[in-house]
Length: 344
Image 1 (cartoon, rainbow, N blue to C red):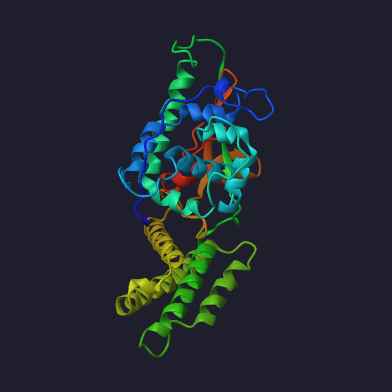
Image 2: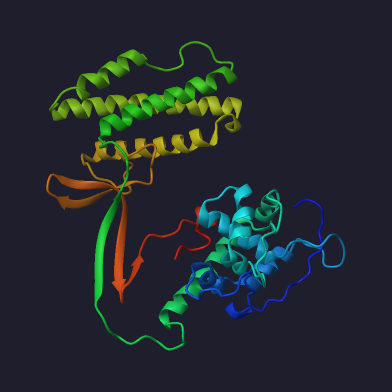
């Protein structure tokens, strides 16, 4: 957290739009997105989190929690780099109102380097709790119409399901296993110099394995038995490589493997298990089937379109209620920092 700083609790009362002093007269609009978001933010809870690591009686005074967390929200919502956050705040009165200022100022509120300290004050688990409170406030505001009274039953309810297509090649079992074989060979190449092992790096001839794949993949309509035999062969190669990688990691340590490579390795293990189960059971279906090693979250979705039975991507459900659109697309907890500051 750096040096210990003193924190003084601010006035937690939200100023009104009429109280905010504009440089050339006029007043802020109530329907602006930053004004709406300021009303939904749990500023008291945010300040309690911010003050946890602060000293209350000595040290240099710290920047307020509202400015700190508000700056993070603005950065994520506008996709800005740290250096541009302070500049945008100094140019936008709505952002300054969102940060709790009482009048417009053209002077930067903080140095861009402070953004690093702001982020350290709000860990991911706290960000997730803040998000839950924001969404709860938003749902309550939507349910009661903003005036505390429940909405009347009226209008039409429209439901629709669609898919957000992912940019992947059309998957088939043989090509996925060939890609998995090539990926595991690359991992072995990266780990081999760190070990004391000598001799052949793989338990098979790589050129022969590639040729066996191409001999089937290049055929326009390969025989089903030939495809199954090729899949079984490639699956065996991948399993051999996984055993070699496991032995290398036990020898040199897991820290030698980059995080991206480790994630790919886990995806390949899941792919091998799925392909093995389908071969044993004589089926072509399995739950949560991996169709892309680069995007393992993508799933096949039956759409039934002419000439395009399946689509690959994320399934979305849309609901239209009184001219408001709601979607079932969730916000991942691991991406909590990008979900703060909902887009209106």
